[in-house]
Length: 196
Image 1 (cartoon, rainbow, N blue to C red):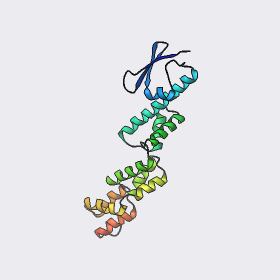
Image 2 (cartoon, rainbow, N blue to C red):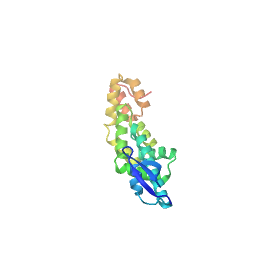
Image 3 (cartoon, one colour):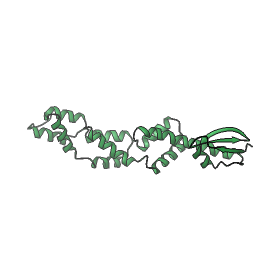
Image 4 (cartoon, helix red, strand yellow):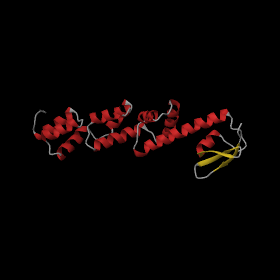
């Protein structure tokens, strides 16, 4: 069996491992610590399996961090992306649990922020619901996020006013997922009776 003869830190966060006096691998510090590598210990099969498992866990969390760097994701959406990158179910579950504990993955926060961003861009509740459901956000979190928004009729009235009002504005709002009540309010304000 090979024996760990040295652990050196060539740069922050990395550890160069020597086996029997010869360079072997440079590993992330976290992997070395979690696997419990120490100088003068044998690197037997169980320790190698543990090291390999910790390295895969670390790589999965790193990939998830890179995915989250550009924008927030729901847990299920992130899970799908990790699966597409070849992570096993156990690795994905471990990574998601780690990221949720760290506060980097939070479906409630994601749903609220996404709903608000879409509402700010002029989308109605139906379109926001479809978007969130398409990102695998739980139905109760979708409902909670929608209830936290400014009422749809008020958003519709403000958007219709900015677009000049009337039937054209109502059609535009309908295409953006506003419901019939909000549209009727816009038309009624203009003196119309119904949508064509």
